[in-house]
Length: 305
Image (cartoon, rainbow, N blue to C red; front, side, top):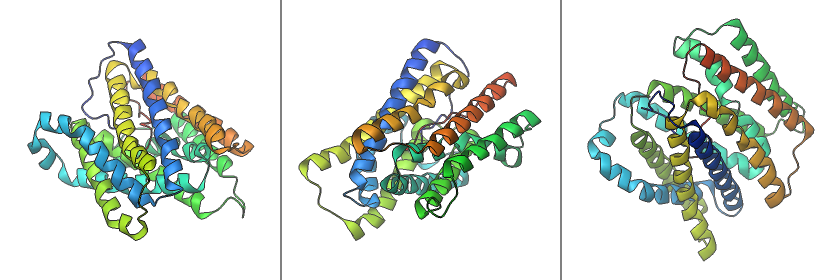
């Protein structure tokens, strides 16, 4: 469930339009997440994955036709691409399991910690130097995760551990995205959707429920909305600096709280709100610091794809 930013130009031509597209893309991802939570209440995660991935591939077909099959079938760094497909497939599966059990705001809080994981792992996996300021922000960010988790017998549930595992995988997806910046977005998204479709095809038969007409339409729209959201976010990151769009990406949490309240009647726990504030502040500082150091900040790339 994550967008891809490979092969993006390092120029900022239209920051105003880029910011507007980022806000629209994040809103569409939030709508996508809300529809997904509605659907996994009645259908298995595998079934949702299968139908949304197939519909998204149909929407993506013109882009695949435009670049041709060779880049798809012969991607650069095939082993790293395959590893990324594994990460994205498991991550999106865990994301839907998480939203099935927990409020949207809770799930988004954990997933927004992914850039903090990236900053913590980048010295070991990317060989990047991380100074004491960013290490301090990383520690504070992890503290925010602990605050949101509010460890107790009541909160340390399987769903909470699914969230932690899924958000960590999302961080690995962002890291591999950095490593594969030379790979076209269409190639990365295509293989992610193929992986999700295959995982859905394998697991869907075990809990298949014949969709009603309205739900079948929603399942198809789920993939379409995700692809349009991808387009908006990727275009935004081509028009302006990732550090400029970082605050806009955190509006994902605002929408999650709003839609969670309106659609599901969920009211976030105070600990979740406090933990989210700490995580957002830490993530924004890391993005600002990376920009000051002339590095490409890690975009959040809202899930799911």
